[in-house]
Length: 407
Image (cartoon, rainbow, N blue to C red):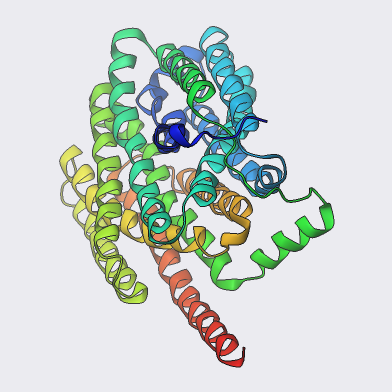
């Protein structure tokens, strides 16, 4: 097995950071193409939206279980194989535009992305520690937010110039380039391999999931991400079919949404030393006010500027909350980084896909008001979860202090 060389560690770290947003690219680059795909493939909007949800759900389910595989068999070879398969399936989607083939390929892509992203998040726990590790972890959500900024912006132009298939050609070429760079500059980062034994693995998962603050944190980041997903699912149809703008405009709106999430993450990093309860509670109050304004103003006037304006504020708050809770969950179990990383990412995708697609279908989101109502449902849920989370977090901290005193 090829281990990571010391002189390649710097570039390998850059590659790991660059691969973390690949999951976002795989979801967001074809958002502006959703109406065009529905028309070209002669299917409904919900059928096209389902391709996105299937990808996210398969990514989430896979991440939950693959952490133990990565802790037992290493990161490098599995991520290399996953990059190759992701590239192949991207080209298949572009060449064979049949809906059920797209569904199958997107499920496979979700699984491969899970292996890639979880292995790269765990890479940092393998290589770094202390303040440096904490600094990198706080960067994850910011870097991950690059995809919602760049991908739909690029996808809007690809759709306008070359059509929707070009999005998947681009994904295939990009992942192929990453594959070559990984083969040249990366290597195995895992130093201590855990035996792949089902009983200890089940015990590890069970212990983590029985930790209330961790499980509540997982649910919170999933619902936070759901705010972004429900906008991604509904905005192309609102902007292009209701307001009459082009796919490029949808790309710009998604760019602003992604930039808002990144801005929230940057604010979270700036306030990293502030108490978690106070800063998250403040963000939740601001978010609720913005959502209510989004709903009530929609009955007086609604246009693309009010839609995007309120969305920017809501997503800045969401990115702020997400970054804080995401970092907390990733660092909660440092001895089982692969499992913790898998559970954290898996829960995010599973919870967000279920809630966003469910609310998008329940409210049939095709206007600013309905989007606001869906947002309000998610924000109130985040608030309730955070109240309970904070109580269990304080109990957990008290138990740790007691154990230190006793020892």
